Image (cartoon, rainbow, N blue to C red; front, side, top):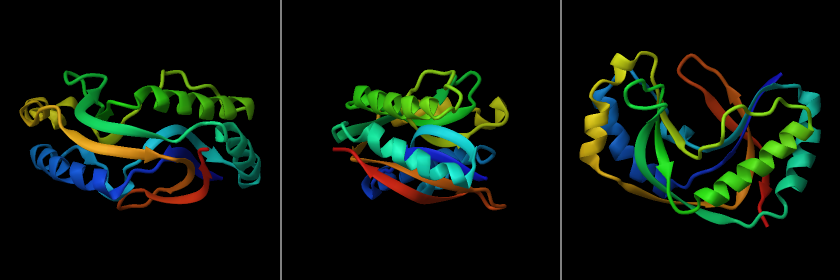
Length: 186
């Protein structure tokens, strides 16, 4: 079994823009489990454990499922929390321009996955980059004020021109992501 997810990659310019703000957040909330900058990506669908024998079928279906979708630019802007700052579970960087296109791309990926027999996603897709995961709300105390002081930052644009299937290997010092297949948008 291979722990698998489908995502869009982000460029170094957006990573670099986020890195300084995430360093400030990390210093203010060291108990939050912060995502390593090199691991940032726009998750379109998490699949979990997939049988190695099923990967080829997934790859073929994804290639066909995203072939007619045009590449687009997705603006990364602002920092927030799911479900909210009162009870934060995830700290995220949000999206501006291009959000509708990202939602459409995720819907196409979701359709492929459901057609292959994966359980339908229960929550609506909200495009974001996960910056950190919060175990206890007290671990993130004060982050809302820090984020408010930062203002509504624009971190740049992601050129969403492909869908990538990643393998996620859980390690002691954090997950390691490796691309297994890349399917260009056309």
